[in-house]
Image (cartoon, rainbow over all chains, first blue to last red; front, side, top):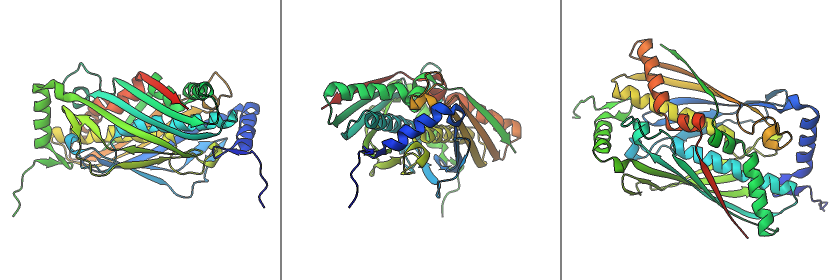
Length: 189
Length: 189
């Protein structure tokens, strides 16, 4: 008969979570991570990223047995054949996923059992920028809207606080709202 | 017997591409696009985005018959079970995919036949920020590095110019380097 504990909440091992936080507080050098993706063009708007290894907690993490293969594409109106979601849509996915996981982890830490977390994201873009037709509109989204619907065993106000805390700690939200320096190197032959 | 034309280059229908650019120049209101993603939490760090419809060229685009379902996760060290790449890795994928497609389209427009486009992206992060252990490190990547290797039927210098032009027009590069305003709304019950 399994022992009933409250270690797992929202599918998160909270005992392991607090142990991880304590360890990183004690040894901040373990907090240095590097994530990676390699990408290869296939044809037209079709390209594929392969994601597997990363650096974490003082060494290469080799726990993943399989690589993730992620296909990108464009719809017909943007000259592709829907070989995958397009890059801007993947960015919305990255943002949705990061905010959602942050909500789930914060709720677990605060002993709130969630029953559902759903979100709808919209990104508005004037494609004249990216298509090079006009210099005035920016290339990327002018604005992104995120609408969350969250349910759980806590008062509305507490659920809203959890979303707010998650927003303040989300890695991708920080990247997308504040920007990051990107260097691009090229070898050609 | 098929008629041999040079309309397709790098898998891109350049005739359609130039017609699209002309149309958008003539009717700039057609350039307003909206991309969308809906996301649903599944368990722990596992959540899934569904991507299908979007607004383009004056109306809802309904050409996609199937939705894309994209799973996110976290590795064990970040309390997940690798149900998918993690959100920060998806952001690297979005950036790689956008730059790559931009390179392919720019090359097609400039009559350059590419033979390969490969890239490796790295994103450095001090996870004390996102984990809420320390207010000093930012939550997101401190920096992103992109290394491209491009080959094709043009001199090195021309291939480099194509990458540079693609960088200057990439939607996701703009978003990631410059940031975008994001609004977050919450309903809770």
